[in-house]
Length: 367
Length: 229
Image (cartoon, rainbow over all chains, first blue to last red; front, side, top):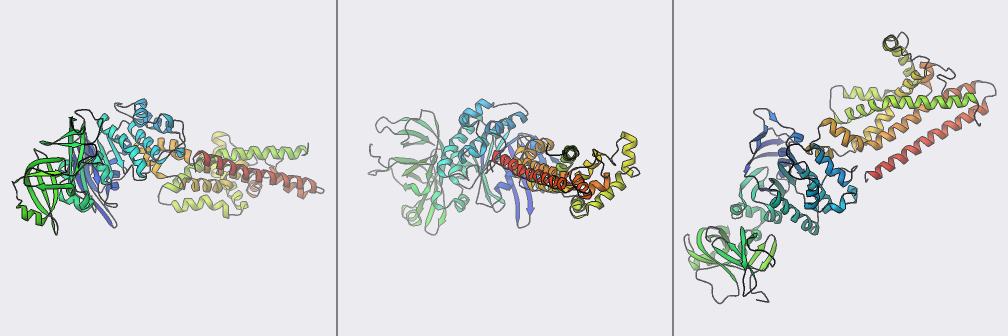
C-alpha cells in the first residue's frame, strides 16, 4: 500500500491531497496542467518538502511531519523518471545506467542486462546523450531509474515531450514493466489515453486537491471524470480476458463481465488479459434482445443508475454480470423506453476500444 | 638563444610562480564559487566583495596588506615561519601568493558563471539515484562546471604571469627569486640601453597572454562539445 497525504502552500497555489493505492499497481495522477500533479510527485520523491504530511510505502515511513521524519530522496528508494529525462550529459548512455546501478542499495531485482533487454537499449549504450532521440532519451531515463532497484517508480509525464509516434514507441515498454516487474508506479499525465493504457488506479486531481480516487474500473464510471476528459471520452474501462477465436467470424472473443464481446485483434492467445474501453456515446440501449441490427456486440444487464449528463442526455449505468458499463442516451429515449433502476436491458456496443486502439464491432467487411 | 640568460630565467620563474599560484587557488576558488552561487548565508555579500576587492584595489595596496599580514612581523607570517619554517617575503612562494590573491577574482568569476549554467535538475536526478551531497558534487556538479574551471584556471595563469604591483611590493625584485617577466621588463626600462630587452620581454608577455586566452577558449569549446552544448 502506498499512502500519501500532503499539504503545501505557496503564493498563488496550494496543494492539499491524500490518496491510497494498493501495491503493486499503477496509480495515475490525472488532471489538467497546473493542478499540482508534478508538485505531488516531487513531494513523494522527497525532493520537495511539504508543510505537513505523511507518506508510507508498504509499512516504510518516508515522511511524517508531525514526528519529524523525513527520509531524504537518496535513501527513499524511489526511481524518478522526469519529463525532460535529465540524463547526465557528461556520461554516455552506459555511464548513466551504471551511475544508478552502482548506487543502488537493498535487494537487486533487475540487472543491467535485463534492463537493456526490457527497454531495447543495446544499440544505444555507447552513445552520448545528446545523440539520442526524444523517445530514446526517455527509455534510457526509465532504465536508469529502474537500475536504482526502486521500491516505487515515479513517472512525471514521461511522454509529454514526445510526438505521437514516439509515445507509441515508449508506451509498450511501460506496459512491459508493469506486467513483468510488478513494480508499483505513480504515473503523472494529462493525457487520458495513457491512463487508459497503463493505470490500475486513478487519482483525479483538480486545483491542488483530489477530486476523486479509486480503481480504474469504478473511476471510469465516475461522473466527475467527465468534467476533465470531456463528454466524448467518458466510458467504462474493463479488464477483460481473451476467450478464444470465434470460428465463424474469426473475431477474437473477449469476456466482459457476464457477457462477451467480439473484436478484431488477431494473434492473441486464449487467457490473455485485455483492457477494453466502451465509450458511453458508442452504446445503444435496447429494452428487448437485439434483432435486425448490424451491431455485432450486445451485453445483457440490469440498470443500476441513471443520472443527468447534460441538458438533454442521461448517463445510464448497466450491470452486465458483475461489471458495469455506461451508456449516454437522450432524455427523450429514457422517457419513451420507460427506463428505470432495476430494469433488464441490452447494451449494444458499436465500438470497442482496445488499449487506445479502436475496433468497430459493426459488421466488418470479411464477416 | 633569442633571450639572454637573465630573461630566460625571468620567463622560467614567471611560469613557476604562475603554476604555483593557480595550484594554490584552484580548490579554494571552486569552494568559494560554489558557496557564493548555491548558498544563502549571513555575510555572503561581504565575502563576495572581499573576493572581488583585488580587482578594484591598487595592486600596491594588496602588496602592502600582504606585508602586514604575511610579513616577518605579520600575524600569519610570523606563525608560518615559526610553525612550518615557511618564509614568504622575498621568496617565489610569496610571489605566488601575491599573484594568487590578485588573480583569484578572475578565477572565481569564471567558475561562478559556469556553475550558474549547471542544471540543478541534474543534481536532483542524481539525488533520486542515491547520490549523497558530496557524491553529487564530485560526480555531477564538478564535471559539469569543468569549462569554467579550465577557463578560470588558464585566465588566472595568464594574469599571474603579468602581475606586477602586488609582487614588487610584497616580495621585491630579486633576480632569480622574485624577478618575474613584468619585473624584468620594468628593470630593463630603468637600465640605460635596455630598450631592446624591454621590447623582447613585452613581446613575450603579449604572446603568453594571447596564447593563454586562446588556449582557454579552445579548451572550453572542446569541453562544451563533449557535454553536447
